[in-house]
Image 1 (cartoon, helix red, strand yellow):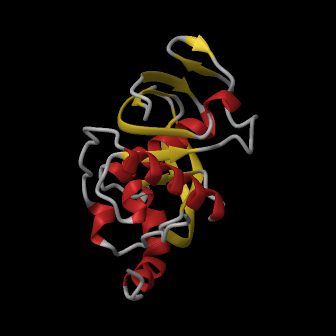
Image 2 (cartoon, helix red, strand yellow; image 1 turned 90 degrees about the horizontal axis):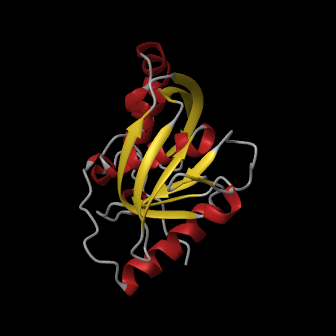
Image 3 (cartoon, helix red, strand yellow; image 1 turned 30 degrees about the horizontal axis):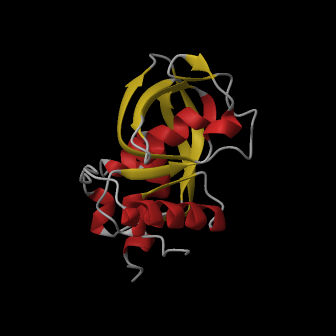
Amino acid sequence: MILEITQYGNPILRKKCQPVTEVTDEIKELADDMVETMVSAHGVGLAAPQIDRDLQLAIVDVSHDPECISYLRVDGENAALEDLMPLTFINPELEFGSDKEASTEGCLSIDGINAPVKRPIEVKATLELLDGRTIVVETDGLLSRAIQHETDHLNGILFTDRLSTASKVSIRRKLKRLTHKDRY
């Protein structure tokens, strides 16, 4: 089922979400609905607060662009992107590489705004899966960026919070217009 995507201005987007303590059938169904919603919206990720749920649950799928990463390791072993996607995870813990780069980001919850965000190039993500396994994903490129972006959502952080001062000034009016829409 396609769910309504929560838009900028809704307070849940600023909330640090609750950890998932038990993977129930309801959580699995919600995750399936989130994948369907993300695909329908042409996104590469979706976090639970974006569909108005206070849970540390997120989806990432960058399989449309297999060249978007230069490496992928799962539990220390080389892995194929298509074997991991879509990646549904709960309660993520991230470690970052020291090098950073800026790349344009957008968000399904912030309609019509894209801007350059500087993030670490590499991430080492410890992710709990819905089948009870915990995996460690090491990667770069769009997959790294998407995992970081969705994990930010779980902590009440939006990509606009990570913009340079000049970029924040350039989108200030657009954000103000979004907050005055009755969209949630």
